[in-house]
Length: 87
Length: 240
Image (cartoon, rainbow over all chains, first blue to last red; front, side, top):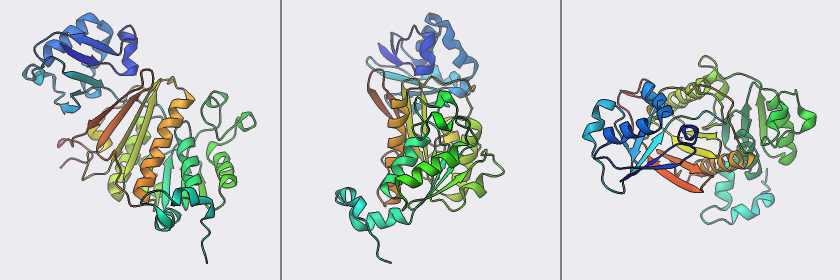
């Protein structure tokens, strides 16, 4: 079961949850289940250039067509990162 | 002229520091883009450390809503231009440091002249239009960019120095929608102080720990994560 880390600006869409556990074989299914569970997160699907995805600290391709080729293991950590402007 | 480094004695005794590092700081020139929540702690720490020349650049005036975090200002400063107001404070803190105040909006067409001969740019801005301008300037001038950003209880820090690292646009090619950002003074103070530490590492000849890395600090849980960043060959700014 992968652990998805939600960045602070998106937690308003996840009932303020920082971590969400999702059981899925690959990144595409993980993201789909995440979007199904928390509809508000679809804003990052609509603006894919805003989203960077790291798995266990390593950047992965953010092209959605390639997500199904990225398998996930138990205990993998998927970090979603979007830009923040505040300073 | 004999240099009096007595006020820096407690940092000169740091391991690997010595009078040589202090002299390097004294000869250093730094550009701080934005003198708000992040810029205040960056500027204060670099001034205290004895950086020789600091340029602070901001086009804002002090607003009452700044005062929960921007500690170089107080109630009597409301309505004043931030950069000269901060300059006066910093010059009192350490007269050894030359502080230059620019009341200017950073744009692609003026950024190279504003940064001038600074050796490093510290990104303390609150919008991506200006962040992209300083990113491109840093690439042209081949100098490092120390990026800081905050949103609520989350703070971020990264050091970009192409061609050895990706640039800001490799990681964030598209700007987020600008909105009023929730922010706590303790978070901006921490991130700004860490930006100052990375700048001091560079200016004293030490390795910057976050070169090519992104550190995300979630102060709501005190969980910190570090990510290795990759260059994007298709980057419109630094890609080839």
